[in-house]
Amino acid sequence: MMRIKIVIAFLAVVFLAPVFVDAANSSQNSQDARRLTPGTLIEREIVGNETHAYFITLAADQFIRISVSQREVDVAVLVFGIDGQPYAQSNRPMVGMEQVAFVTNVAGDYRLEVRSPKKDSGRGSYLLRIEELREARPQDHTRLAAGKAMAEGNKLRSQRKAESLRNAIAKYEEAIPLYQAADDLEGQANALEMIARLHVSLGEIQKALEWFNKGLPIAQSLPDRLLEGAILSGLGEIHSTLGNPHKALEHFDRALKINVERKDQLNECLSLNSIGVVCLSMGEYQKAL
Image 1: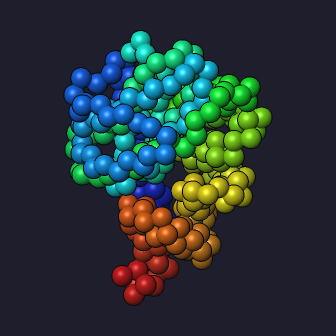
Image 2: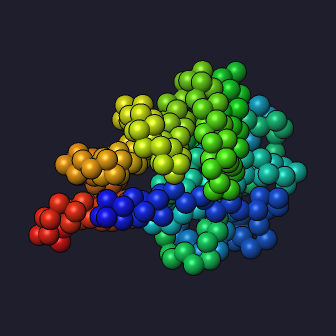
């Protein structure tokens, strides 16, 4: 029974679909837009239902990658072209790193919005910066094709039906060779992690274990250890479900150290909760406290 409780908790926290924001138009509730320039790190607080807007002046045929590191709040990142139409977006189903990457087709001012779409979200903060800005290369278009497949998979996942989840897995699988062709390790690790999570949602635990194990060494090679911690937590949940509490604790402990190192308080709390539940299932009540 205890293993069932921890799996349900994990599903509720991690597998819930992201909140999809209306990207049809630029938000009318955003604060006055700020200018975003290369080499500038922006740290700001944000609350639920709030939008922060930025302008980026770009030339034609440029590749740009922007990161938003979320702290104790889940945000969505949207980019609008010079015509005001949606151009790119990112909304991962967990607190951590959001990234948008795109190639410009014309020169001008592009608008970026950081939104906290959940009205009941508390106060949190984020770090925003331009990670990469250069002339576009052929492999950039391959990377964007992979991102498109991932976005389609995210929309399918949000429907929360078995058929749509399997179709989402197919989209994530479609993205993997594209990320490989573009030498994008983070994209590969993200796709592998999402496939594993959906197999858990479908009750296919052994398949989930295989996909998590495929993604772990790639995630471990990345400078940001967010995905590594997420995959280790997933492996902990898998081993708990399979009745291997000692292996579960090993993975949860490793995830906890990463979350502490990253100063990720939300995922640190989730790791501690998972460790406590496993200890309770083993009758180690003092450790659970």
